[in-house]
Every structure is written in C-alpha cells, then in structure tokens.
Length: 300
Image 1 (cartoon, rainbow, N blue to C red):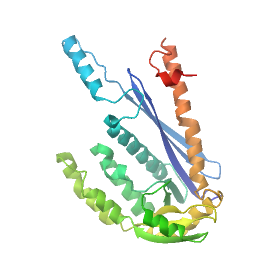
Image 2 (cartoon, helix red, strand yellow):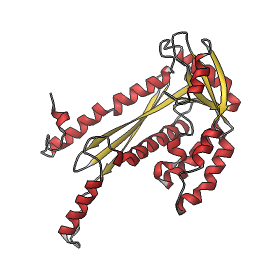
Image 3 (cartoon, rainbow, N blue to C red):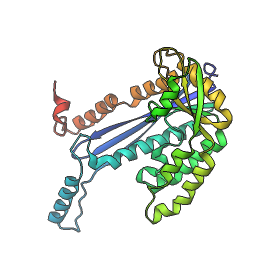
C-alpha cells in the first residue's frame, strides 16, 4: 500500500512576516507519496492597516491608526493580543490540508497530520465562513471517503499514552471514539446570531461523525514511543497497519515517515527561511532593505 503509491500524505506550514507597514502570512501545503508524485500549493494573506481617505480629517485618521496599532501586539513577536490571528492561521492551514487530501489526491488511502476533525475547524477559528465550509469538508472526509489515517505529533491525553506505552512493538489498541472530543467543543464557542445558525450543523457533525472516527494507540518498535492515530471505524485495522508499517521505517521515532516527507518538502518550499528571503528581496527592490527589520534579524 505504501510503496506503490496507494497512500498519499499531506502536511502544511505557516510562515509570517510582521513589520510596521504590512504583515504577510504564507500558508503552504504539500502532498506526497512514495511513488514520487508530489504537489504543492501556497496562499499569502496581507494585512495592511494604514488607509488614507481625502474625505476624512487627516488628524482623526492618524489618531485612529495609532489607537489600532496600540491594541496590536509587539512587532515581530508572539503576543496574546494576536492570539486569534494565530488561531485563524492554523485554522486555514488545517482546512487547506484536508481539502488537498480530498480534492487533489487520487490515492486509495489519505494520511494526515493531527486530528481529522480538529478544534480549529470545529470552532471555525473565529470565522463563521470557515466553520460553514469546514463542516462540509469534514463530513465528506469521514462519511464518504472513509479510508484515512491521521497521526498527531503529541497529545495531552496521558491516560492514552499510558495504554500506548504498555503495548508491545507492532501492537495497536482501539481505545475510544472521537464523539466526546467533538461534544466538548460543541458545548461552547458559538455565541451570536451568525454562530447560532450554525449550531445545529455542528451538532449534526458530532452525531454523525463522532462515532465514526475511532482513536487508537500503536507502537512501531521497541525503541520508539507510542503514537496516537485516528481512523474510520470501518477501516481502523488497515489504517493501524499502514501507520505502523510507515513508522517502522523510522525505528527510533516510530512516526510515519510519509508525514515527515511531506513536512520536509513543505518546509523546503514554503518555510520561514525561504519566505524571509523573498520578503527581504521585495524590501530591497523598494529601496528599504533594512528599515523595517527587527534587531534580531540584522544581528550577526
């Protein structure tokens, strides 16, 4: 299933360039298989808060701009003021990964990173439009395609890790369904008229997709830690075997190498280093190569 191209994996990456004049966020997604086929897609989001209008008082416009910028976080640093923006970036990337798996892959099996119904998509990441589109996407993946396996990098469920570390190499255990996880998210996060209209659709996702997605643990080798995986209830056995077979290729990590391959291709194509070079070149062409760079970026 792996080396004949019957399994394709998708992973994404987010890179941001935050300066005073403009904030640019690049989201890249790559689809790979062991057959050598690959595809890559990228989208850039620009945030520019400086706007001028001849109809308004320039002093009022300037004071309004300064107030908006005062409420934002520090330039080129992580800040709790921009936490929603960070969640939105992760939500768009999660949607893009699953959309590529559904729309661009021709393989029988689809392998993804994380949860097939992640928090960012079930809540819409603060965007009703994203939630509306995500509900359709997740239902198609779970109820129609069915042959998928998702492996997250980590989990906060220590009880599942305890079960996983009790497994022998090449053993797996189906522990639970995804219904409780979705139900906890559906209990909140939906306030206001726009969100209230989508609440029945979220409840439908919980009822229809929750019991269909199972949560399991596996161990690929004696050296590796246990890993969590998500699969459709009707194809969980084959999904676990595919995940373990791919993870055996990295005996020390015990993590699917196909996901690592997708991540490597994505970082090489759309990573922070590549993205920084293109933005710095644009500033240089505009005659301002260093003016808006932070101190750390020019430190030798």
